[in-house]
Length: 83
Image 1 (cartoon, one colour):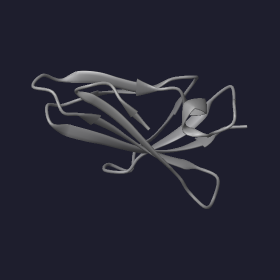
Image 2: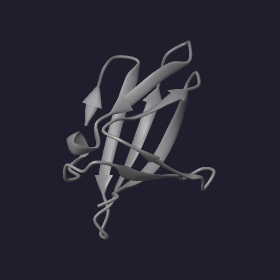
Image 3: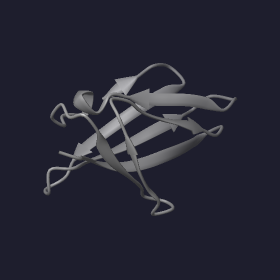
């Protein structure tokens, strides 16, 4: 979906209307990687529900999904509009 050098964002629409995103850091230092949910194909909404697919933790966000991604690592979320 997006390649910004050491940072990449991948998105995959799911059959239930959610989107799974991968925030990838290929760099040699931790990096904040982010994406607007509407860039992933989700409809515009006032908020979004996020599930971290590694930990199972659920949170909510507004119009930006971002995470501090460790060196050579990924953060993976599944996202749904809250409306």
